[in-house]
Length: 424
Image (cartoon, rainbow, N blue to C red; front, top):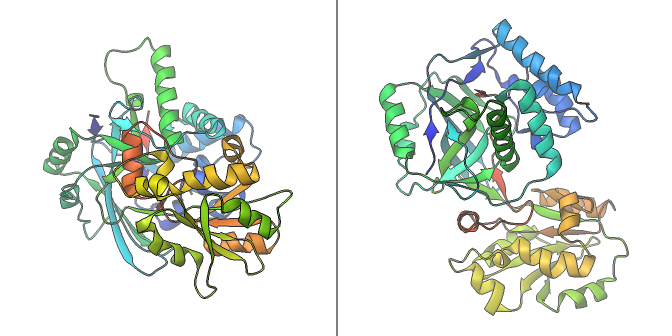
């Protein structure tokens, strides 16, 4: 069990709080997108949360100076009393189905993996170093971790009805309505705190930010003689939502692969046929729509090889991967991404776990159109179109102290950065 507490958040003052100051998380913002967001407004959160390409260590001090300047100027202000913060997102997926996801921002007490808080993926050293440098300089958590907890009755939703005059309420360029407001009523705060007291949390997104907060806590505690009382740095800014929330959506993350010495199509098909049943895919529908109905009966993914070559691949041996996927087992081998890695990418193309981590030969995208376009343009030789990982698989894998391959999940929509920050 973990403490999930109200806190005195730092927010944009009302006259500065507008759509142009918010942005997605740092890890989905490219150098070009950073330029786009910083050009939108002089106070866009990206100015201080996203490290410019090629920046030296002095940039982190500049970001801290900018943050402190915004606070002095009244651009940002800290709330006087601890509270939770409600966050609702109304959005539409590609099939035009509409969803609503509800959750709160809270200060969650840091714990080692498996001690009330669980992960489903490993992290990379470079992003951890970047986030730690920023946290050391700013002494703040600017962007939230994304967590989920079990709430079968959806009790949290009862406290998450946005008021007419929410602090933030606008529809972004992707069509997502973003609604954010403070939950200041003492009775609501008390009810939420009591409700969350016995919960455990699985990290959905933001593993690097969580591990950075752990490292920063350990640094500060060591430097300060391990204080007996809880300190602000013992907690991490986190958005939490119910595992059962109908708006908790995972999108597939397709793999686009660069292959040197690409085998001929007959040779490749023969190689893949050792473990996979391969059929030619019809050309009148996206591969994603063709493999989605097959998800209920086992592993299925599509391959696009350019020049009209589209295959649907299914695992042959129903006694292994397929049966595991439809049971309650969280066996990593039951995951489509694991089967793709173990039976295709590594044995056929030599793309092992190290190559995946380096991201040298694999490009990830949630767009099938983009994946196929990269093959058509010659930037890559194959696109692998996947079904989304199931929420139950994420939860079970994490709770069994296992991890998934890199980029197994893409929780959508992303959380906005800049709605509320946590000072350390």
